[in-house]
Length: 302
Image (cartoon, rainbow, N blue to C red; front, side, top):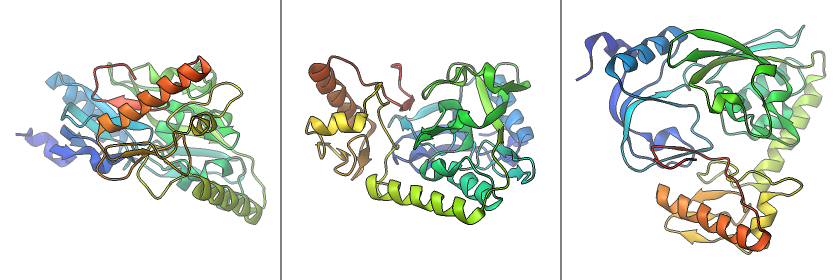
């Protein structure tokens, strides 16, 4: 039974997480909520602390593998904390963490702001993108970031952290280790550019991704990080692993760095395929392919 004072926050029980990640895999969340404001977020975090239960934070659920077993604690989905404020003169953009990255790319482009055209196909939110330093086509989130606003899970305090304090590198930041929830981010893009040229470049990037990557089938995006001076997808393809299937999971025949859910795949199906890839690459090349995938509800380290 939920406390009456939280019914207005729309906390639900035993919610299937399959609809809240791009792989369409996962068990039931013991408690689940989608806050629409910082105040609502603060309230549910405070409630979880009083109940002494863990909080799990998800955005679009890309780059995320959720266990098929039920997930204890409170799962907070940030997707409804969205929207942005764009200044087309200065190029300053303030955006809530639940805003989808492709949506922001379109919005800033329409204002004549250059610098996010590469992000049109990224299947995540701004919050997840800032945590993971999402990137593609030679660009990444850190390139244009000024700062992030976060809430501390331990103290409940709201803090602003400048980019130079986040220790960004390839798909890494301190946000992956600290108990902090990104609630918003501030960016600077180049103002005064031709909207039609930006739109053309954005559409070209989108077409490239749609024709070279399996975006019509549930996946998490790229599974493995690119080793230095190499492409993970090419390494996997050269080993002849395209099309390899376990259960409902398959290494995509279109792009070998994608594992797709073709038919009710389980988390174990995905993990087994990932392990095979890592073992084959290690045996052939002598190094380990590291995943971009974060895991939720597993005991082992991601």
